[in-house]
Image 1 (cartoon, rainbow, N blue to C red):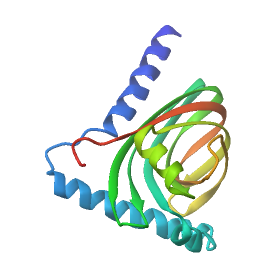
Image 2 (spheres, rainbow, N blue to C red):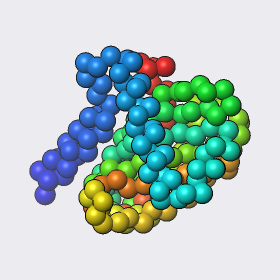
Image 3 (cartoon, rainbow, N blue to C red):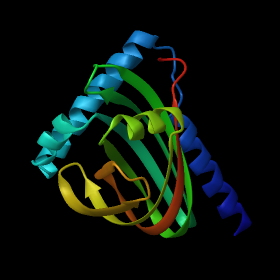
Image 4 (cartoon, helix red, strand yellow):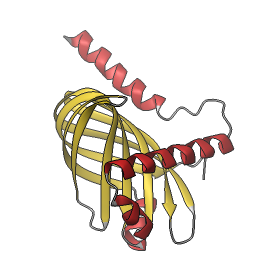
Length: 188
């Protein structure tokens, strides 16, 4: 049993760190890739929630993240890369995320997160401090276009709306998580 725990711990750490490995690609290529992924995430969001298109337009700023999450019985971990786009001045801030939590769950999933910031204050707080705490319940069984997922999230930050979209994965969980979002110093 101890060996299984050690192997699972190694898998979690490997998945999280692999999300942040930048390889040999240059800064401009990485920025372009994040912009491309952001557009794809918004396109997927609009299919899932067509009314979100106007909400994105009307928001002060929005953020998109591509994330991998692992749930192993009592513990969960996530890692993500993304960007924040300020609708008022067009400024892009590149960011990363890591998350850990406790609760019941089992599975692995590839998902997308979209934040909508209502005003400058919540936008600046996210860029400068980047913390999010939430409770979430999640059931996902999806591979490509097959399957489906139900996602709910309760966020304790007023002025922020969050969408989570499962891309691929098999997971069932109920967790309390703490996440840290921070500026990517290599890309900003």
